Length: 168
Image 1: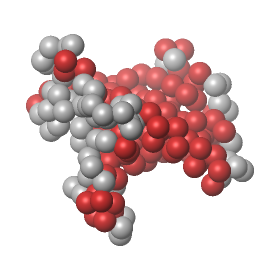
Image 2 (image 1 turned 30 degrees about the horizontal axis):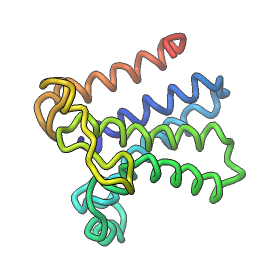
Image 3 (image 1 turned 45 degrees about the vertical axis):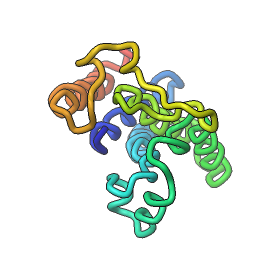
């Protein structure tokens, strides 16, 4: 998926965590930002990714790692969460959980791509919902379905959960 699609999914995931945990309203802007940024971090393993275009060492990480393997796994999501809690113990846990939800949203939304990801790394095998769901429910990155439907649907859900938090 494209970076903007992942960011939308990360914002939505962060909103769900913030709403479910009844986070104070003052935390919401930062939690949503954490979710959006964390949602693009998993693509550190792709030289052309949004994150690698913005950090100096990104291309090195993108060429050293196989795309959609380790960084797109449940193990990486867990390690990301542990790293955040270790690096920033003074940050409220709900904000770090929002970031973790954003990261996990990336891993899960890539399951809609026929290529899938190595969800159970280090076990071999790529997982994709394309094996059980028909097209157009699964689709290629930058396809018309992603651009015109998925990304917009995610942003609509983001707006609806802000306007109507009872949906959470």
